[in-house]
Amino acid sequence: MPSIILSEWVANQSRQRIINIGSRGIKLNHDEIYWILSQMGEVMSLAKLHRKVAVTHAVLKDMEIGEVLPASEICIKTDRVVRKSARLTIRSCGHLLKLLIKWGYVERIWDGRHWQYRRIS
Image 1 (cartoon, rainbow, N blue to C red):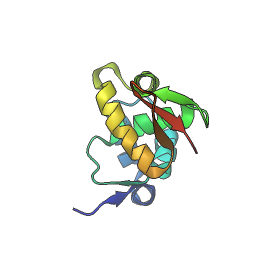
Image 2 (cartoon, helix red, strand yellow; image 1 turned 90 degrees about the vertical axis):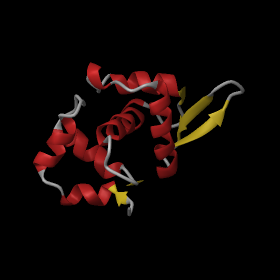
Image 3 (tube, rainbow, N blue to C red; image 1 turned 180 degrees about the vertical axis):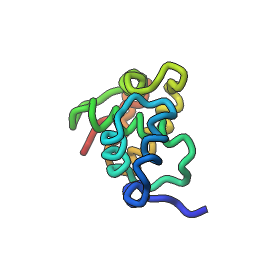
Image 4 (cartoon, one colour; image 1 turned 45 degrees about the vertical axis):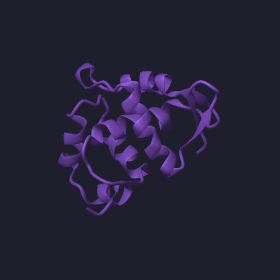
């Protein structure tokens, strides 16, 4: 299965398709979802896209460049835009943060006990 570059994929989608992503559990409007999708890089599938959007939103909107946070804190920021029924676990948030490392938004730092994530761009 070929990978999908979301920033290119979103340009070819209708407004209704973007709204449908938001209806899966994200409390963001159409314009915010569109902006976040246009900032995202390559993914293997569109499964659980609303989770990818929520974690990317937490990093791009709620973290300052240079700020260092553990996955648990990023997960709390993610939960602010996700409906109660669609909340993420810290583990799933950590897995999605690996995508943001790949895209160049965060880097992972070992502090001796836990992984920390620093926003770099």
